[in-house]
Length: 129
Image (cartoon, rainbow, N blue to C red; front, top):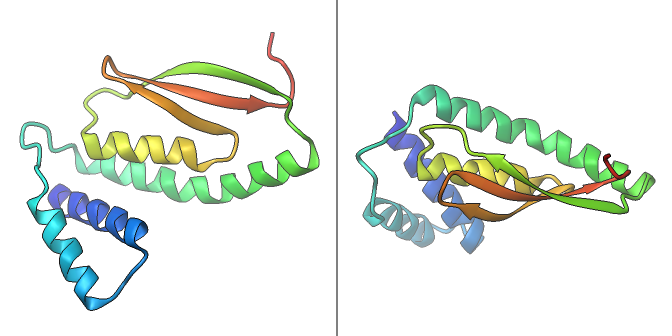
């Protein structure tokens, strides 16, 4: 099951990059998704994938609310913080984590550190003491 989720993630990225849903592009996307190297040592648990997908769905209305908040009340301060990566994350799940963080207007991942941390830039309304 996790293998199918990995394939769907790769196809989703392919379609976002190409913005083309023609039959030829779908076949090329499937081919590319299948020949990309896979990590067999850590497939990731199904519950981790489902949680990451639910967080992605929750991020959509959150992004609209944050964008509206930034328009109504400007945010003049910023901070760069280090967020810890959850344990036992596969590269696909790490990608989804970075996508969710970056999808919302107030945050963006600047860098992923191999030691298991994201460097995240936040915009804020007030300076936090």
